[in-house]
Image (tube, rainbow, N blue to C red; front, side):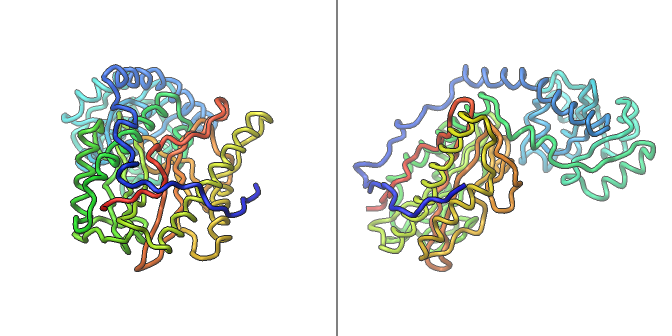
Length: 424
């Protein structure tokens, strides 16, 4: 895929009179929409399980031991997330066979499993999984079990092997991740709804940003606006970084004050009905310096050439029926744009990542991502950045829905990418 020569992006300067308004973005989802999404998940689960079982049969295993909470929610409907997993013990682990799905649950979760995963069989546990393993595999009638190897502790593996030595454990990775990267319409709708929650929250926060207010105060304020604006929880902790701190790609807010004449970077997201959003906006507190404005224009330009390449790739795939380019190919386009500018180093992280039930999932758009065509339909971030240690940092992150059949390569992060000036 060819690169695009550097050019100056078409950016507006948005002061208070031109700021986006919360009403510019979609309203929180209604109860009817949430019920429709729940029903869509219920209808999709048999197809999801059928695809997993096809993989199991092809690989010669008769069981699949799932340990990741997002896989459990995707395949059974039980709505765990990171906050619940820490204290849940082995509850929420699941075993898929050719005909059944067993969900492990102690007394705290048996009602939840019956309510949210009615097509699964509850396997009650009172102790650690390995102490029930022999009974579970006997009830399931399995002898060769694929295990999510990236998620199981070595000690647990050894204990399972010892508990049922006649059952072969096969380490695998990526089976369900590969299924989850292709999104159905209701999944994409929820990512868009979560993006709208985040868009509205930042738009409503703009008047509160002024020199002297701290990063932590703004992060808490933004969190409150998301939680009261349609989010069931945050997608991840809010990052709010002022001035030189914006050079930390994954920094945390502190008691540092917002600085006049410097940048202010927000990286944040909401969760709606289990699905996440992720966006980054770098704002200017007062008149931007020539350097900061130049950095911003370069990052925006890197995004623009990727968006143009995505549009062209979708059109070519739709017209010619061929595969989409790879994630690393798009990463190379953004890097070559920044390198061609020549003034600042390119970002060290990947260009983007898939998003859905988890913040980071397949597909990957980085130099080390799988060198295989992007799937469709799917959704991922495009987030180039430039970071100058102890000076400044700029990242702009948007989520993009890619759907060849519908000819789509659309941003679902709708907060403007223009030069937004606050604190005046």
